[in-house]
Length: 330
Image 1: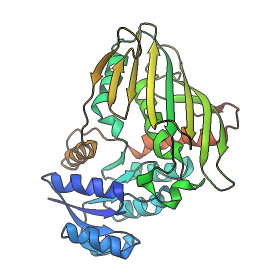
Image 2: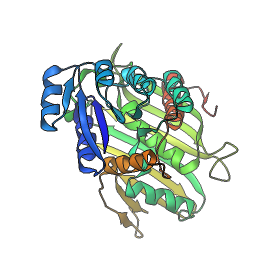
Image 3: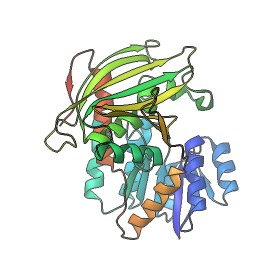
């Protein structure tokens, strides 16, 4: 049985804790949150020990796995402390508040003989996996365009009522949601090489409320397509439209769209429209299962700190571009 320490007892931390509890080979042994009452309540529900300081928890507990589910600006300190303590680490996305900091964690990952992963669930989501496989199989012909579309009537969303998600430093929908979809583009086409975007912010220190941009994917030497695929990003918050998160791949012979995070549709809006996947699945449990496979020396499918840092480099470029192309291939 692998003992797990949870740092961050919020909504996402709770989801991961439920999956650790459900898996036959893992158990939540300790929980840490700066809110002592929340940590105590979270730990009591799981017969675990509560802490308000991650360093104290790492020193006191003989943990096998550390899950880091706190705001991005704290990922480097806490995930790094876990690695330095010889504990295997699962970190929430984004890997850090910026790619430079993420690269520090990726360097630690490369030096440590430990299992690491970032929670980017498109690696396991059935609808996205089928999208990836169908694009690779040529179901849409030659890919010509990939579109990322986001609409948030309210940001943060009602269930995300935490101040850091409003901040320009580490919050906003591009980091919180766009990271997933930019990772998806990497899964489809092997990399994003150039980015240009214009961003409007909700206030001097507030996160973005509008992003309009383009990118070029798959053009590097190891790309998954014969020629670069052009992509677009269209994000808007605080409006009257329904919430939307979508990735669409348009090719010479058809189109595939993933909406609602899991629903895959072929040729939407045409006579040939077909729902290909409407299956929801607990990707956190899949992540835990893959992580246990790696702990036991098996061939696991995990998103590395290095992969997540490459995605963060693209996110940084969205904010740094100012409408000029930024090379993100390095």
